[in-house]
Image 1: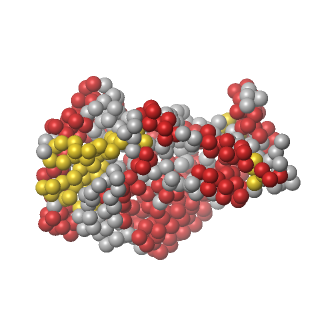
Image 2: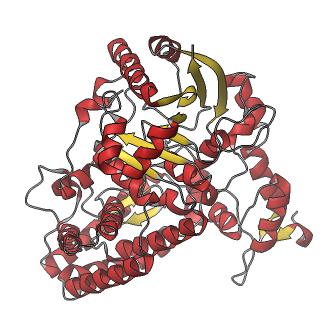
Image 3: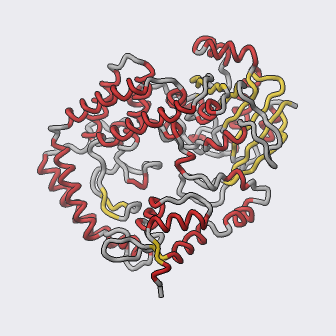
Length: 528
């Protein structure tokens, strides 16, 4: 029987858990465990209490002997120190690193580990120092650029995706945050005036009020999730019945407000994945941004709008990363354990991301160093780095020409895993960026066939051969890869390099639903 001594408040539970697992646990973390049915709550009169033993049981099941289990599955050469297990999400997505979602990026701490000047039992020497230049020929969303700046290192990025290059450059470019804030407030005010009299605002308000009462009655949290977990409720049959009831109400309100839900033209990403009310707001904000003359502010606003519309796609909360089919009505949401609705207005997301972006840019400004970082949009297999720099960043060009590039830190694309253009298809549609899908190395449409692997080897080797012309004689190259097909020894040989070391790390915090034990290798390459 549970005694009073065993019961903890949210604050006490957070403090106890922090000591128990030697990692910072907040009251929000504990609330999450309760709301999602991971641990039961105890208490009456509105006071939430947690049984200490239930908390201990949860963390023992979650952590337990994970390191030993993973090493058993992946090998004893797994470098657990590079798991960064102790970090909270807020630390791995600090300041500008979370300006925009991006599939396939590594955490900044991994970059810092190899770029900074510390040594340990695994990294026995330093490879870069302040004032050096590092190159990332697969720049992605610019993580290497940002971390280089923090460490006082200059950085050059290259990416075949025009939108990726924009994200990276916005993160490291100077912008007047006060002027940016004034412009965002102006656009937000105009957007709110634009939608003030729209019928879909009243429609969504009435629908939301209905859903709040309905979900509270038939999908109480966390009781409903716990019953589903214990199989006391047949989730499929139960939710189907309630979906039908709510859908009838939804259709009734659509008719009442004479609302057009979907767009007439659905042959583009923007046409297919956005409801008509959202599309109207997107176009309105886009028009406002086009009026801005300050290029730096305009580019930041472009990223904010892209981040906003990504969160407003007509899909379920559980399918934001995969996009199965557009959702245009109410639906049972397995993620939240209740009936949810698609979005009909982006105002709240736009306002939230404007404030968040300004805050993150301000945080980065406080720690940034007076160094140069820039991402070029081009093909890393063929681009003339110095020629492009001379045109676009002459100061950085003079520096690179004088001292050469010390080395590379990059995460090349994997074979057939991510479509780097399609993941931001909405941005290409809206902003008119040129797509260069055919130039992607390891393109998803080629899948993971033997031929795709051969093409990948040639592509990565071409990049290394092209880039090494600009590197210092005693260069160091670090490539992060999950080389399950053992392709990197071939790549190194074709590029005239040798793999001098390998760091095998567990990847603990993955966005994919597959949570199987998974590792990646950081290959250290040098000239032969």
